[in-house]
Image 1 (cartoon, one colour):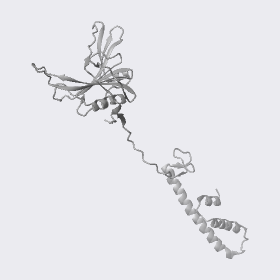
Image 2 (tube, one colour):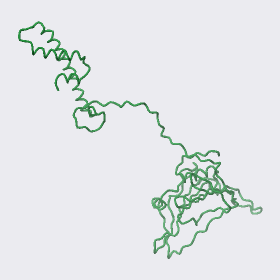
Image 3 (cartoon, one colour):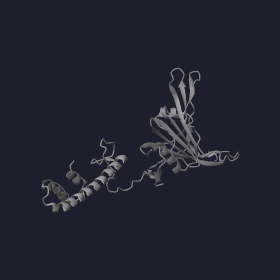
Image 4 (tube, helix red, strand yellow):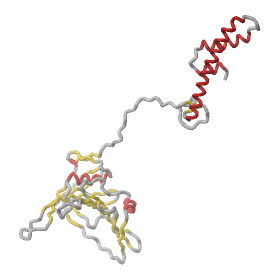
Length: 304
């Protein structure tokens, strides 16, 4: 790079000074020795000033190059960050973009319209009887939570429950297996959420049961005709009835009290699921069931 190109590449210098500095150099080479010597002081002064200015700017320029190279920012002229091959670097500059509006990380809650939920009133409920399997031919197994998750391919735990309840189960599953073939002939996942400090004999809480082979043990079923409700794309049969509890008066046979029982039956992930609740409100029960289906506790009931 010659002097003219260097000066022009640096920028910020008046073109007249560049032209004059270059013309002085060329004219001094053409003037015969001893002729027009009175012009030399002025031309020499201008040339020296131009050279000093160029030297000063060049020193600042290469100092910035060294500083930029040590910081390892962007390749000269590329405008892109990242590894480069050239040792000539410039300090990085933040891209000039219009300011974007802030985006909130908070997601919208799942809205469930209680007006679309139908609760089937029941005259009564029934409990199933546990099937019997000959222990000489079958064995009972207890699977841990990891095996249950692999078996079902999903969790049936409630993502939300009332704050006074606690999960009392370990998330395991009971299964009955044929000793010879290893075939699972009965399975049942049972999750219990309960308030152990509730004063009455019938504790406040709910139970979730799930089975791939069909629920048939320790489960509660509805007895009357039913209507389904859509809960986040899953058809659910909700039921309700009031049951009495003892001790009963020996003369009048009046119970000690009554309590609400809510039920929900649905299929989810290839399994049959049944949820039974004692002493929950309708809103609490529906929200607990919805959290099993949606697997989120961020549910808002509307129209309740």
